[in-house]
Length: 147
Length: 147
DNA sequence: TTTTTACCGGACAATTTTATCCGGTATTCA
DNA sequence: TGAATACCGGATAAAATTGTCCGGTAAAAA
Image 1 (tube, protein in one colour):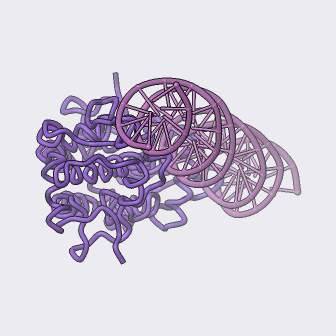
Image 2: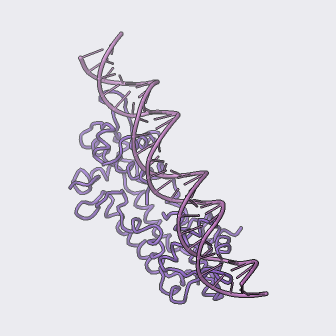
Image 3: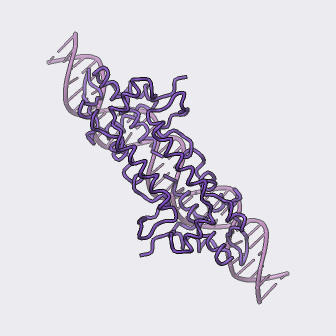
């Protein structure tokens, strides 16, 4: 569904958001990777993308790390993260890969996939990182496997 | 959403099915690739997978080619093709990549993605190749771009 | 029976994705 | 100021996906 990079990006953003919201503290790359169970160096690249896109904030040096501002917690949506990492193809492109699939010249699955894609867009658009972070904080959602 | 291989596989199956149902004739690899606008050699690999999975039939030699039997037209579903090529991950796996995402230990998006995944499974399960081939035959669906 | 056709199978190559390494820079603290 | 911390950026590498090539095999037609 999403690329690995995007999966890591979403999980990381939620974890960072949870720590920012709950404890008001920054988290280092090492922590992030450990808490979402992802490769450290690769996660760093993904986080850099999100920082450049303005979806989260980073601070260098001791006491530095990643955080989400109150503003970011309230406004950054899943959709923004997905688009920043994977681009908009999954959200708009044709399920069968036709370059110009539309009502003009629909693929045989066009109308079957419309509601699915709409629902996917709706979910991504209406959930903020802050909201999902709250779910994790309340023990209603997990970002890695606890055995 | 699907891999390129899977996109080609679905488009090819529908085209072959349409030719089988409409004209009762086999189609060669060259035809298939031209009609669905896909790389020939790569498409051959995908078709071989589908033949091995029993989802379509091939015949060697002159007058040979690929076809769907009446039985295959009526019973082979999109789901079988997707599973044969991409495996079941897209149909079952966690959207955030957690190895064991369930009600026991759900990811923060688990319940949001359940209906989406259900609907996707429903679409793939309830559409046969024969049905989609009919749509193409009636000019209601296209398998490549006509400018 | 010989030739031609067309799928089969394996090896190979290019591209993209995933992942790692390491020096550079900014920041904090002693 | 100096040392330690932690993100940044570029180069590099491994793996998966996508794509190509070519000889082999089966089947039909001449």
